[in-house]
Length: 415
Ligand SMILES: *Cc1c(COP(=O)(O)O)cnc(C)c1O
Image 1 (cartoon, protein in one colour):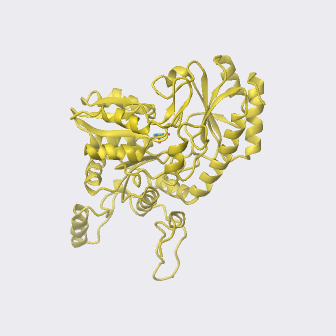
Image 2 (cartoon, rainbow, N blue to C red):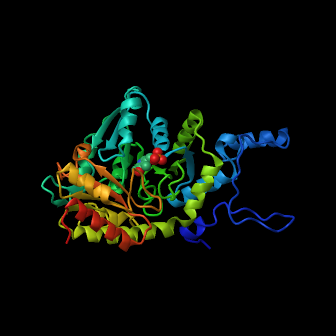
Image 3 (tube, rainbow, N blue to C red):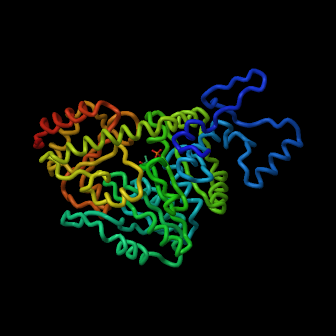
C-alpha cells in the first residue's frame, strides 16, 4: 500500500528492531562519526565497488551514516526527487549547485527577484570565473501603474527565451521570491529550458517540498534552505540540493565531494525532527498568515499586501495552479514614504522579533527600503517602505492586536 507523503515522512529512516531484544527506538539515532570501520578487506572492497556504481554506502565520515541518510530520504520524498545532497547552509547549497552546473565562459539566466546573496555570489565568484549572469523579469506581476498583470505569462516566457544565448547553460529561479513573492511559471520555464537542453534550477525554500514540488513541475534541480521550515525552530543551518536525473546527480555529487561539503549528525538530526512536524506547522503558519493578510488588506495605513494566496496578489493564479498551500511569509507596503514612521511601526511591534530569516515557530519582521527593491522589476510602490512579516505560531488574535497597536503608535491609519 502506498501511503501519503505526510505519513511516509514520519517513518523515514525508522530503525530496525534489535534482533536480540526485539526493541527499536522510535526516532533515528544521531550517529556521529568522522570515519567508518570495515570488518575486513573483502567488505571494504565491496563497499568501494558499490560506491563506484553510484550507491549511497557510507565509506567515510563526510557523507554521514544513518542520520544523514534518513534526512536525505526525507527531503527526497518531500521534493519527489531521487537524490539529495546536504550542505552546511542554504547559501552553500546554492553556491555548490552553481559551481557544479556552470563552467567558465558560460552564461546563466537568473530571475531578478532572486534571494539577494545570489547577487553576491555573482559578484564575488561567478564573474571571477568568467561566468556571466543576466537577470530576467519574472512572469506575473503588477504593472508600473499598480494594476495586476497576470495574463502575460506566454509573453514573459518568450521575453525570457529571447535572452538565451548559445553559451547559456542554466536557468536559475526562486519561486515565489522571498520579498514580493513573485511566482514563476515553472512548467513554462521548464519547457523553455528543455528546448535549449539546459537545466532549470529552482530555489524551493518557500515551498519546502510540501507546498510546491518544482521537480514534478518540470524543473531539474531543487534547492532548499532547510534552515527555514524544514528545521522549523530557528536553531540550525542547513541546505539541500535535490535531483532526479542520474547524470545531473553524478555531476552534483562529484562537485559536492570535491568541495568537501559536510553537515554534522546533530544538525541532520534536528532537521530530520523538523520534517516530522512540517505539515502541521505549515498549515498553522498558513492559517495564521491568511488571517493577518486579510486584516492588513482592510487597513488604510497599508498600501498593499503581498501574499500569493490572496486573490488580489499578482501571483495568485500561478500559486493556485501549482502550489498545495501557502506559508507564514507575507510583506506589506506601508502607506508611508517616511522612514521614521516605518521604523516606529517596526519598533512598536512587541511580538515580532526584528530579524532576517523565517520558518521558525516565532514571528519576525524585517524592514526593506524601497531602493533595496530597485532590482525587482515587479516592485511598483517606489519610495514606500516594505515590511516583511513572518507570521509564527503565536495565537493569531494576539498577532493582529500587536500589529494594530504598532500601526496606531506609528500613525499608520487603521480601520
Ligand atoms: C534563507 C534563504 C536561503 C539561504 O539559506 P541559509 O541557510 O540562511 O544560508 C536561500 N534562499 C532563500 C529563499 C532563503 O530564504
